[in-house]
Length: 241
Image (cartoon, rainbow, N blue to C red; front, side, top):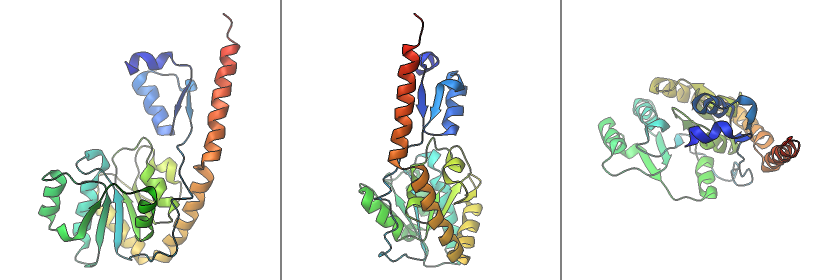
């Protein structure tokens, strides 16, 4: 049904350039009918919380366990390879683990059950505080139409490792360590690099928050929607019936 309807729409709004390309290709829609307006973020909730002390060896990621596109397997395999050199390292997954599912079995196979924890049902503020107590955020997704975990981590000033796929590069700009997808070694190497030069990456993360404030604030996005809506109405009025 979407493939039948989409080409007939005169105005489509999507949150990333990557999604624009996918819509044009998959639904046979003219690119001139597609407008890119990023999603917004509650930048007053996703804040650094400077009063919270960072755990230097706490990694954090957001993933629905057993959803392959989130690439959680590669973060877990990376964690397993880091344990010997960093015995205190741990990974918090914002998400729910399926009982006796693929992720649960993988954690057992890797022998990292005591290094991984899951939290779900958190408020936005509680998620932001988990970021605030973490030293590095990882987004190992294989695809993101619009990667909210990316901009949430950046807004909280957490040094970020993210895969160089789909919408992620256009969201992060120069403020994250980009890696190839499906590569646990690159994740491990990036973690080691950031921990070895943390003060520098902390500055990058601070600049990254300003990037989020400038690009993903709701007033800016509201204005962009208003412009698209008004232009669409005007174009409709100008149609010669």
